[in-house]
Length: 381
Image (cartoon, rainbow, N blue to C red; front, side):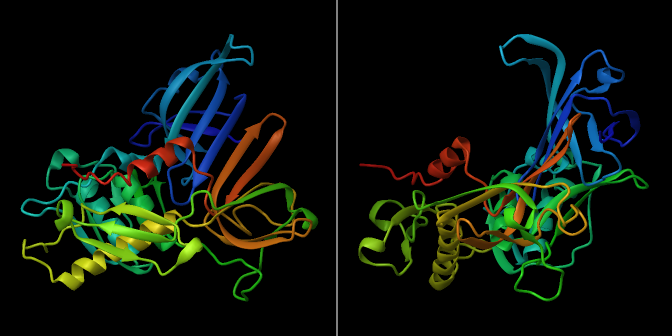
């Protein structure tokens, strides 16, 4: 069993345990992962599994979580057991404790540049060096900016910081994480690029996950148009007939599937509160429309249990964020996709890996948030 180190928030080692009943640790490229630990409550050091403490898997400074919850676990019959069920989020989830408060004198917090630069701008403004020092989290520091990713223009106003980073991450393909640095006793926020390991490139040894190649134990896939939209009406500022609305998309007839995109939060002024030229406002609205239409793309979900004794070694030949090739000859499916989620499962019976390739299936909460985001806020008269 993989050992678990229990740490204080200042990274002092409190204890180490390796005789738990099970551990599920989920790593995510774009979003915030989580963990679930089950352990007999009478075992040594379980009293240190307190909310607010940190757990780290072995010596992996990138597999770290904050304990947020614990309870007495129930069995399959709903009866209490002797096990603690300890739950928490990946350390990167600490950024969800902040929202994007605009600077004084401006309606939005604005950033332009490489996607990495923009992500680090928001973390710096709202956690590392905020105007209000009470918002600062002393342990968190920024890694140096390497200006990776596509050029983007972003503005944010009272949005959850983690949600904004997720949006920028998905738009750019970059991942992000918070890891530990023990010499300096700090938490480091950084941005990452995955490797291209597909069969159609020659820079890296390719990785093909397939039941036929004995690298996948099982594979499931779903393709769906239920959530698909390809034409958007993007509404900016204004009220009623005076509200600015632009269109995006070129599909016609039966193939055209429309949606409304509320973009009232997009400012029509610059940082000096001067009116922007109309063409710049329209460009900003269309950029928002592109981002939102991408969320309503044709869905193709791939999930699989990776064989631990496959030809490919986890964290060496492939890792979270890499783009690989998935193939099932039986189903006639071959697809290149990024590994966006990895579940590491530790049990007395052995170690297993479950992976999500590309987008994960939306949960009910995600679907509700997506629907609520489309509420226009129009006032009917």
